[in-house]
Length: 100
Image (tube, rainbow, N blue to C red):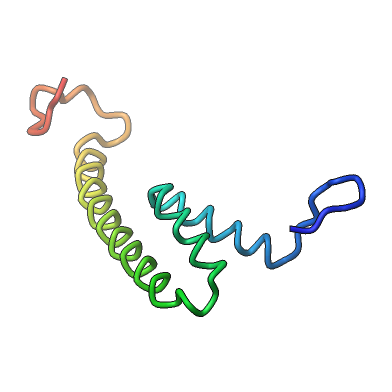
C-alpha cells in the first residue's frame, strides 16, 4: 500500500475494490481464517486461482443455504402478519403459534 511522505495511507481503486470483497465475505459469514487465506491466495496471483474459485463456490453455497433458511423464517413472519391484521383485538389464545 502506498503512503504519503507523512505516512498517510493512499488508497487506489484496486485497494478499495479488494476491501469491498473482504467486507462482502465478512458480511456473508465467512470465517476470519478463510478470509485470511483468501488474502494470502490473492497475493499469490494466478498460482492460487483454483483455491480462490473453490472458496467462493463454497461461500456461494453457504449464502444459498442462508437464503433458504431466511425464506423459512419469512414464511413464519408472513403467517403472523396475516393472523394479526392492523388494529385487531388480541388473539393470542387462538394463535396456533402462540409462544407467550
